[in-house]
Structure formats: C-alpha cells, structure tokens
Image (cartoon, rainbow, N blue to C red; front, top):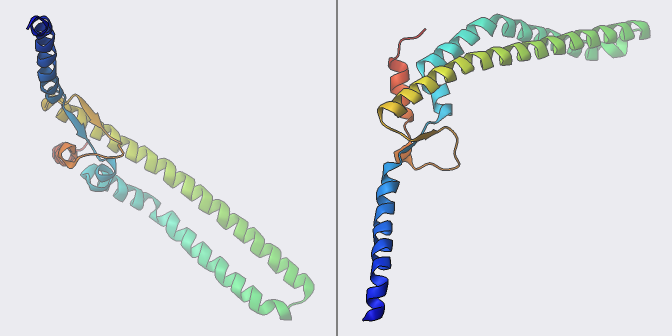
Length: 172
C-alpha cells in the first residue's frame, strides 16, 4: 500500500499528459493544395493557356510548314539524287543541311520563348493561387498548407475550396 501511494501522483501526472496529447493534436489543422489541379482547372490558368496559344500559334504554324517543306525537299532530293550530277547533288545537299540547321534553330528559339512565357504566366497564376490559399488558411484557421506531399488523406485536400475562391475572385 505504501508503494501505491508513493507512485500515485506520478501515475496521475502521466495519465493527465496522455489525455492531453490527443486534445493538443486535434488543434493542429493541416491542409493540402494540388497545384497541378490549380494549373489545369483554375479560370486564370485556362485564360493564361489560351493567351499563350494565341500568342504562339502563328509561329508554331510557320514552323510546321517549314518542317513539311524541308521534309518534302529532302524526299525529293533522295529520289532525284541518283540521277543528279555530283556538283548539283553536293550543292543541293548543302542547301538542305542549311535549311535543316535554320529550321532546328527556329524550333529551339520557339521552344525557349514558349517556355519562358509559360513560366511567366504560370508564375502569375501560382502567385494569385497562393494568395487565395493564404486567405482560405486564415479564414479556416489552418496551421499549415502543403503543396507537395508523397501521400495526403483526401479529407485534408482543400484544392476544391481554393479553386472555388480563385474562380470567384475578379481577374486582374
């Protein structure tokens, strides 16, 4: 009996700590936002994509036409090469190499310009989305909002709330 009375205060303290831990854990509120979905489904992201398509469609069409012309010229050369004179064949071959080099350069420049503009536009979308995420987090008292994770329980996914708020916000 003497041993029990000596350990009772310690047992009481440990018991109260164990009971307090789940209560504290419930106060921590975490959420998750799927940025890929934001980039696919947000009105601002769709508008940015449409803007990029409009901005780059002419250059893309020119590149496709240039590629088709080069392909046709190469096929014609391959058909006609056996019957051409050596000097004519080497001249035509140099012209095709120059055309191909020009085509590759223009395609690379197009891709670099497109990627730069896409990063710029998506950066603006992400900036607006992050502001909305912060507003939702503050309004609903979240302690942390994650954008990247290996696994997320769907009950913590607030992407729909963010999309709704983002799509409701007036565009700048």
